[in-house]
Image (cartoon, rainbow, N blue to C red; front, side, top):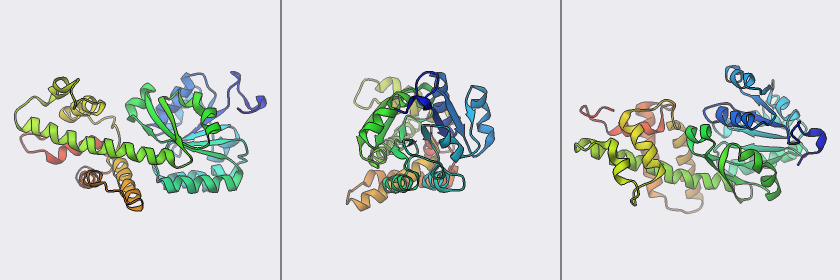
Amino acid sequence: MADENKANAQGTEKLGYLGLGLMGTPMARRLLEAGYQVAVWNRSEGKVAPLAKAGAQRAVTPRHLLVNSDIVFMCVTDAAAVEEVIFGPEGLASAPGSGKLVVDFSSIHPDAARDLATRLKDANGAGWIDAPVSGGTKGADEGTLAIMAGGEADDIERVRPYVLAMARRFTHMGPVGAGQTTKLCNQVIVGCAMAVLAEATRLAANAGIDANRLPEALAGGFADSIPLQLFVPRMVQGIHTPPLGHIATMLKDLDTVADVAQATSTPVPMASLAGQLFRLAKAARGADADALEIYKLSATERHAV
């Protein structure tokens, strides 16, 4: 825990949040609602205003955010974006970092996480936790995310109370990079589940069964799951706003799975097929479309949803 002269009125540490996208905004809001002192920064100022209105302090640069925070959380799109906010002009690495922690909720390659952690420690002494999340925008809104983490055990315990204001589960999986590897395992399951559920839902629709009733009919059986209950109604009813996740994000993660699988001589035939289906979905629906629009790949004129 930070020294008392760093703490806010509640005796807790000063927090920063960087990257106010689909996940970052509700996560930062939950920290504010829990009573923590939170500063925020985002590349586009428009996303800062609602949180500032809710009580967040504005940081003018990532450097300014770390200067005024003990722990900085961040959630950005990919490793290039992480690189930019850390080592770009006025990045986190340019601020004094001894005794401070950066917790990265982004999903990036495990090797990139290890490299960034080492370079940041060498640059300013800040610690690193890679902590990718699962649960989508719904989980971020409701505080029910599952977060898997890599880093030092003491650092994990230091951030645990803050993370659990944003998540239901926070699991230490090993050293830096272990969180990202665990997230890849998660994405193998989720990506394949999306592809399989799209297939089952289309079969029901084409055969004249009310696909809306699949979650009810299969509840409690071996096919039941959170993805079944959440994804199928959205596929059938064409509910894609707000997206549970973008096609480009799922494809990025499945491509990383393929890379790590090759490096570790791990066969991943199902994940590889799911990756190719999402590549088709990206071409057909666009990179920023909801990942569940994979269902539309098999649409006929009769079932155009």
